[in-house]
Amino acid sequence: SWMSNLLGSFGMNYVRPNGLEFAFIDADNVRIGLSQSLMRRGVPVSQVGVFDLKNLFRSTASDRYYVFGAVEKKGEPQEWLISLRSSPNFIFKEGVLTVNGTKRKQQGVDVLIAVEALRCAQQRTMNSCVIFSGDGDLLPLVKALVDMGIFTTIVSFDDPEKSNVASDLRDASDNYIHVGSRILANCIGQNDGRLTSQNLTVSHIRLLGPVS
Image 1 (cartoon, one colour):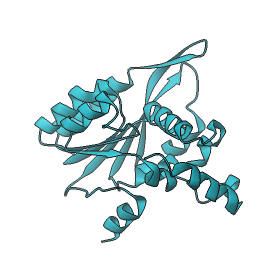
Image 2 (cartoon, one colour):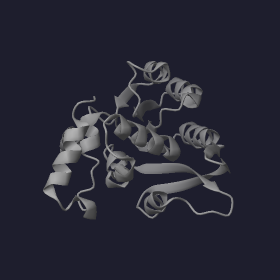
Image 3 (cartoon, rainbow, N blue to C red):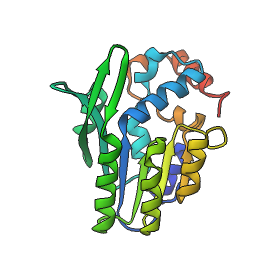
Image 4 (cartoon, rainbow, N blue to C red):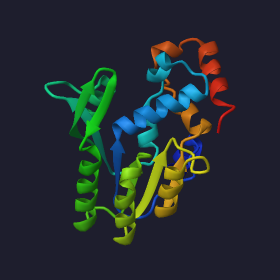
């Protein structure tokens, strides 16, 4: 089917269950995970914007995407979050971001994710869900969703063979997808102005190769 072809070409071993599926995106956790994953591969932090996370989210072909991001008081979301907010089937939910010097901490985002996911599960408006996050604070939520009969998939940049938190999330969920090199390569924005040079494109993909 077209969906199987899409997910297969993207590098995900993912077969979507029947019924409505909602995705819950921990925006800050995903963005940090992407940055750390690229740094391990030698990709400059300045090039993070070259990777379009919307490609990653869309790969599951979910029916609705809840995006949870923390915003400074009286502030605006980051540009990439504003772009998601204006996309079809993406719903943005705000938490609070506190900044102390160089330290940034989001407050209430994990609670917002839990409340929204459990509401959807309780009302049976979804049959399955995808959680884009590697946050261990979401482990009780994952266990609760599985116990309620909601087929739950975790998508994370953390390798469960190298991280205890990722291992716990993998064991608690129905399915765990580690965002590795192949998936990252498919996140490169095809229409990004910074990728007009073929050498730059090849360079990025080459950097993505060695680390799984």
